[in-house]
Image (cartoon, rainbow over all chains, first blue to last red):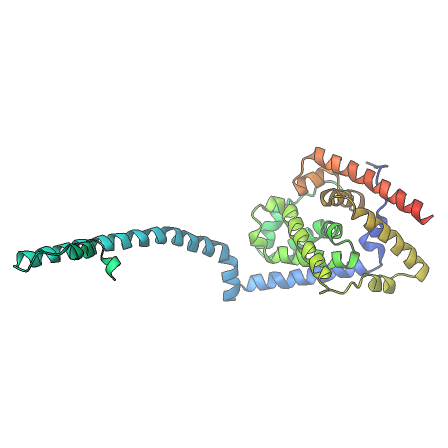
Length: 116
Length: 187
């Protein structure tokens, strides 16, 4: 279909300068060939890492998303266990005839981190 | 470029992933000139656009595994080209590049008079193109310089066909206005 409304942009034509565009295409194809040879070798560990980087990043992100809350929950649980342990120790000492625990000791037992 | 090719972009991308140089060559045949037109729309000078389109195409082949929609290889390649072209313009503005366009062209053309005339025409066209929005510029270059059909542009740029027609219409009207104005000024 002939389009009469077309703007004449032929001065921007790649082949406006003889041989120049063909040379550019040739150079591109040579670089492409080299890139494909690099891909074919495939034994370069950096290339392998680069090829898998998207998957590796996604896996790392997933691990971080799972581990951070788990670590937080474990820390909370550990703190709870320390409190129980402190209370048990104070109770055992009181039962074995020592004096009754003071308010400060009880407070320290239920919030051990504050005393650290 | 007339009509749609027998091998789809997805077939060619799959073949390139298997290492086919012939398929990469077919993609270059199909897209390299258009890539240059897209780069030219951003860079605004021929030598820079040619450097950008080569780099963008080679980069696309190197990263062919990252092309998530092989059937839309063209749109992906053009986006790479636009990004690289913008980087090129930024580098040029910051003085990291030498504009060798005129030197290279002067070496290759037959006579100084012809060179001067073509260079002047090219300058006028590029100056006029610089005054229209990038998307319209791209459409008019792909259609009027590269000979792509409305359908090809729509499919490969991911635009509705009506938008392509509208961009083309407005780009041409604006270019005619600017070029007419420039002609009036030079007389």
